[in-house]
Length: 365
Image 1 (cartoon, rainbow, N blue to C red):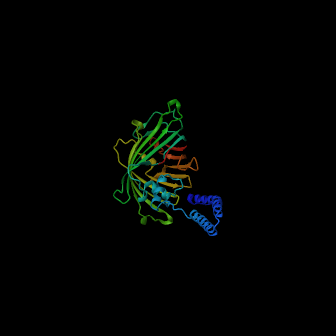
Image 2: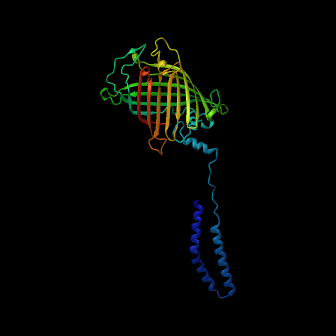
Image 3: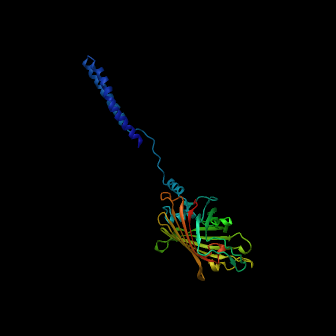
């Protein structure tokens, strides 16, 4: 602490200066001719020196240093960690709870925009078989685009905001989200680098935390939450390129340490006879199982989509991220995505392909 160090310096300085001051006073005492007066002078001299040394050695009165209370410390820690940013030293338990704000300590209020799905830009995205002539049973096929290239860019922007807190059930929240996915012919300069496909997906998500007493599962697993959702997805096109569907879904999630599992069951809502893609769920499926793993500062996620009555289609997708700078895991991250199967985009819902994308995560907050 700085004050004791300063006090020691003052004491040391006094020991250096004291002999000079004492010599001058002793000379005055020695000049006295009367023995009694001379002795009394020496007594006063040494009593003054002793008093000065005691004053310098005594602890100085200092203001107490404020210490964070136990109530304040968690708030600081919560503000220092962005919810949902996996792979930054957080256990999956903490990441999932903070991301969906499952406990009262995690609540951050309503109408605050946050990231939803990982946001990324993959400038190098190559597919094994580009869908040059998309088709559907009700829309037919479009003329083949032979100029499209198999190497393009892929990007995703996904945001959400809580609009109601503590709705109907304790700690249950209602969220609104929007996700946009695009395939961009970035390297196709001859055709002015057009966007080949863009999917838009607004979503409403009702999240209900599982109470502590009900969440304990065998094998140290913990059941964390239940979700009910309503989503619309379309590619914003018309004519033969139009694709869309509406669905409700039920989801649930469990975790154990750095591992997590999430299950989502989709129920497509009926549409008119003029459906853009009536056989969509036969290809992309109606169920999704996602496994997450946070090994250190990296993140890995494997998603399997399938139809519960037909496991021959669907898809597998592996996402991996790692910090560009090891000492800044909350910053820019490398992003690698491997996809195989049907439905990487709505336009390709009935087209099978394998693709690999490499790039960077954009932001997370």
